[in-house]
Image 1 (cartoon, rainbow, N blue to C red):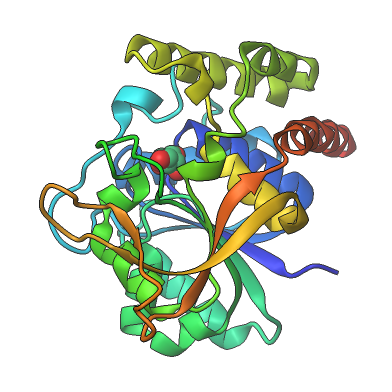
Image 2 (cartoon, rainbow, N blue to C red):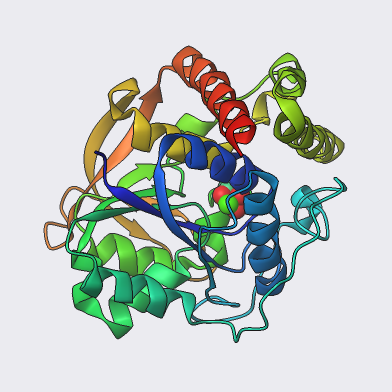
Length: 312
Ligand code: RIB
Ligand code: CA
């Protein structure tokens, strides 16, 4: 039985694809949300909407940080839409009226109370994980595998050198990469190799109501990317690659590196690799991916989503 998995996300369209696929391939124990693609209320609400879409309202959702450790929130609503899930009709949900910020504490509590190792797949700014490491340092050491979507060693997407998640909270990324050993880092270096074609996007329509909903989200996402002048080759569902890497690490080529993140200034959020920084833990950085296996896995997993839906 594989480990239980906690998702730490900022849904967001590619987070939505990742969350749907995760419910099909992981034993999802819970979701912590964080402000990132859109504000903290919307990411919290969107997590409820996505789980309702797949009939998994049994999965607990906890609201994490509404802002980075320092400075103000920078969102990516120009890509994900004002509400964070494009313009698609989303399931109506009752959003619990809870204070922001406690999601990290709930995640840390799991570390104390869950006897077995549990894994985390983090696909937004790393604020919740950094606050865990700050507030309850022993909890981070209890995490089994930590798979992070973030960073880039081959150019950024929010600035010329910085990837969005690490740009949105560079201090959190720097803290986590400086504290946690063995982070499995899925950066733009591989997510851009595993981009979807428009034909791949249209193929989601073949997978029931959930597939049709994801198709609408991804068509919006593609339209925004093209409108902003990016090529269709950047139709990368970054966060879904992190779930794929958790499920199939053998389909990724990794390199051990000691990493840091620039915290401010012109290079804010830029990921750095420094072999001389021997005081920092080694991370596993994804540099290559079997993109065909990734695409095949997406639709195999969507088959499972359809089967799960039929059992409800
Ligand atoms: O740079 C890509 C990352 O930023 C993804 O996690 C996407 O959802 C956005 O949060
Ligand atoms: Ca994300």
